[in-house]
Image 1: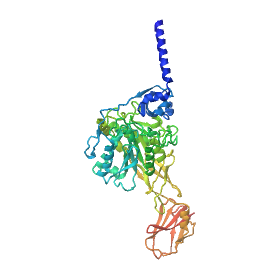
Image 2: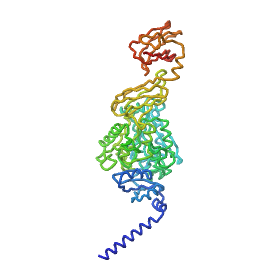
Image 3: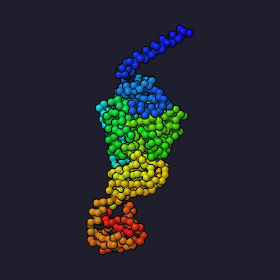
Image 4: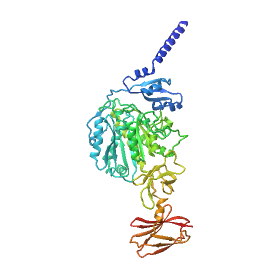
Length: 577
C-alpha cells in the first residue's frame, strides 16, 4: 500500500512539474508553437456559466455555443489574450488536402445541371460577368471594391429595368463573410442563375423580379475563401486577408465604433458605403457552422432591448425554418443547440459586438438576419445540391416578405415633390426600428406583423401627419401621404395678389376675388391641413370672383390653392372659426 501511495506521489509531482514548466514558457512562445505557419486557429472549450460569453466575445471570435461547449476562432493576438484566462481548450485541426472539394475553372452557367462544385476565383469572376452578358435586360454586375489581392467584392443587381430607379423595395443577399463558410457562396450563385433563367416562364420568379430590386453578393470575403490560392477553397480562412473577423468589424449599437479594436477593413468600408447609397428594405447574410435563423439583436438581450418587430422576426424566421424542415431530412436545421428548432434570437444564443446584422438594422433601418445553413462549413462538393433543395424555397419566401407590409410615397401636398420622411409607428418603434421614405421617389417600405398601427410621417419643414393603418401578413397596404409645408414657403406664396379671401377668418361663407385674367384649365382647390382636397372647381376666364358655402367645413386651418396646368400659382391660408 505504501509503495502505491509513493508511486502516486511521484506521478502527481512529475505532472505538476511539467505543467509548471509549460506555464513558465512565455505566452508568445506558446502561441507561436501552437499556430506554426497558420494565421488563425479554431478551438473549443467549456464554460461554467453563459455570462462568461459577454467577456469572451470581446476577446475571441465565438463561432458556436452548444450548452456549455464553446467553439471559437482566434488570431495570434486574440489567442494570447485568451490563454491568460486559464481555460482548458482543444485545438480543432482542419484538413487542407481534402479530396471531396471539386473545383471547376471553366464554367458555362447555362450548361450547369447539378452545381456540385466550387469555382476557382477566376471562374467565379467570369461567371458573375456572364450573368450580365447572358441576361442584359435583367442583370447588372458590379464590383464595389477591388482588394489589394486583386480579388473583387462582386454583386449582381436583378430587376426588370436594371438601369432605372423604380418604386420597389431593394433586397440584399450576401454570403461567406467568414471565408471558410462557403455553402451559401454556391447557393447564391445558383440562386442568381435560377432567378434569371426562370424569369418569364415561372410566375413566382417573374413576380419577384417585377416587383423588387435584388442585389446578391455570393462572396463577401474572397480573400478568406481563397486563402489557399485562387484555384481552391481548401485552406479557406474564417478571417479576411488581414486576419480580422469581418463580422465583428462594424459599428455596434451598444459598443460604438471599432468594438473589436481593429481599423475598419476594406470589405467593411465598401459594404458600409453601399449601405449608405442603397436603402435596402431587407437583407440576409449566409453563414455556416450551425443550422438556424438568427434574428436581432446580437448585442442586446431581449429583456433590456426587445426588438420592436419581435413578432415579425419570429414569424418570418419560423417560415424559413419550417419550409426547410419540410424539404429536408429529419434533423436538418435544428440549431442552434442540439435538438433546437431552427430559430434563435442572436443574444440568446451568444452575444456579438460589431456584427453586420445589428449594424444594418440599427444604423441603416434595414431588416437583416443571419442564416446559418450548414453544420459543415465547407461541405463536400457532391452534397451542395442537397443544401440547395433544402433551402431555395425558404430563400424565395424570405425575399417575398420584402414586398409585404406598409408602403407608399410621401410628397409635398402643394408641389407634389417627393420627400424624405421619417415613418414612425407610435407605441411600437424603438431602437431605430422606424424607416424613411427615400429620394428620388419619396417611397417607403415597412415590413411589419399583422395588426393595427398609428403611423406618423414627419419631415423637416412640414406638419407631421398620423394615420391608422391595418396591416396583414403576406399582404401589402398602400398609404400615399401628402405633407403640408410650414414656414417661409406658405408665407411667400401668400404675398402674391392673384386673389383675395374675404372675410378671413370666416364662419359660413368665403368670397374669393380674382385680380387677374386666367387662361383655361385654371382650378381652385381647398385642402385641409393634411392635404386632403375638400373643394375643387374650374375657374372660367370671365370669373371675377366666387362665393363658397363652408357650412360643411369644421373649424380649423385650410389652404386655398390656385393651380394652372398643374403648377401652383398661388396659395393662401384660410381660417374657419
